[in-house]
Amino acid sequence: MPLTVRQCILNAMDDLGDENFSRFKSNLREVAIKPGFRKIPWGKLEKASTLDAVKLMVDFYRDVYAAEMAVAVLRDINQHETADSLEDELKSVSQTPARGAGVTDGCLLLDQHVTRIIQGFSSVDGVLDKLLGIGVLTGEHYETIRANKTKQEKNRALLTIIRGQGANAKRQLWEAMVVADPFFMQSLTTE
Image (tube, rainbow, N blue to C red):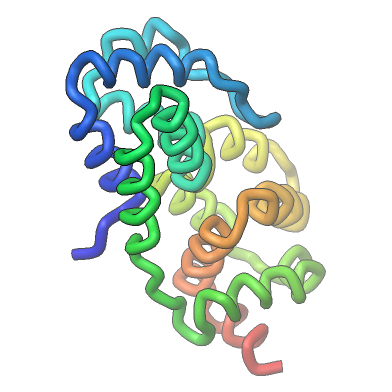
């Protein structure tokens, strides 16, 4: 079974040992956070086990950003070998293409058909649930998108957030959309 981003980060944390893991948590608390995210409360992070800390990172920062932060913090605490190993392991994370288009094609089609997706994709609520469940969306992003009244507004907000997160997030969105509404998504690939 292919590794997930969460498993890759957990493997890196398991390699640290107690002292370096404490340093990791302390530095994670101090690192600058991208706009749209918030820091993990120290009360939750301070006594967290490796498993709990990784869960918090993915819950607060999504898979892609959690991985970026893990690598950066590992480098900050001079754990360059562990950071390099994590980066190598992250390259092996499953890149299974969605039905109807490959990963790259799906990312490209998302960018090419923004207007059609905003206007015509009708299964956005199920996609939001899926993306929250796999850590692509934070709870805050999820609630912000769900607060929109129309499907078009939800689609617009979702695409805006995901397009800012990079290719992996776009791939996961594409895959979730293909599962939720295969006929609509197929129509994008046959134009």
